[in-house]
Length: 383
Ligand code: GMT
Image 1 (cartoon, rainbow, N blue to C red):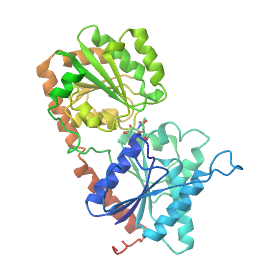
Image 2 (cartoon, rainbow, N blue to C red):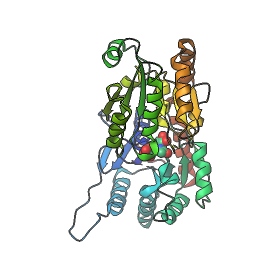
Image 3 (spheres, rainbow, N blue to C red):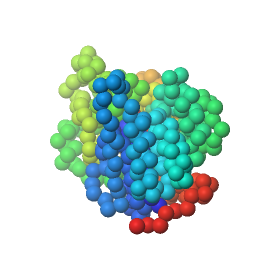
Image 4 (cartoon, rainbow, N blue to C red):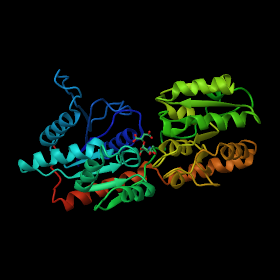
């Protein structure tokens, strides 16, 4: 197949999923064309089947805001025409689903068919999309997509609850590359980070408010009262400075390491004992899944789709949003009991295997073919 993928290129989960899916499709022999305003962060190595098309837009003095949607639509039209795309898969509804629909209409005028699949990721539905600023466009463009997927059962339900959707939504969960995310023996690296007997807790996010990083610090401060530990904070974003301040107030600066954005997250996860994910809102929780693939149990909130990934009392523990005492008690339960921790580590890994990219990618592949057939689109000949 000749597949077009539109996504955000940044470190957010939707961009990661889009990129990893495209890479997996390319490995299977499909030709994949990424379209975005910047090279996606995880699209970092050459692949003969992968192409990247940058959306450029001019900064004309008349524009207070650059018309990115128009530039993206034109780029989709151009790539679809020239590269003979069989299907376009857009990740994150805003503004990608609307631009894809517009591109499809333009191509239709030329007698070309471009089936469009929109994948809903989270805040495009749970937060931003339902704001009246975007609601009519998001609703319309989801309904106009040929296929719609959501990354969790929770997100599917939430979409039907808050939008007037006439389309069937297919749940295809997020996935993890178990070859990349695995438990390596990195004892020397562990010792460089933490002292003898010190446990390592980790949190990975883009430090947006809804990630509740302040709860990560509160949980860690309670854990520290009982056992020796280090907290590794991976990622960067709007609340980072506030969190640095919070560490000073809590007097835990020497135990907390702000690592910023990291490419090799798997190396950090590989030496961690527990992941903390106390989000207020989370459609899936890819960060938790990647930790679990590295045998790291998860202490999380019960927000959104997290319980579909982190099974309470099996792969970690799930607490009500904001209940930092409960989260700290659960963390201590595991950190104090080596046997229990080992059991949870194995359970976390077994659960991650259910989301192996090798199992999930074929679901997308089959869905692409299903939507192409429904749209009367025949696969273009290679070459
Ligand atoms: O979580 C973020 O801040 C990034 C966001 C995105 O769209 O880039 O992530 C969303 O999509 C991920 C991949 O499907 C999910 O794993 C995250 O749970 C989801 N985030 C939220 O729902 C807050």
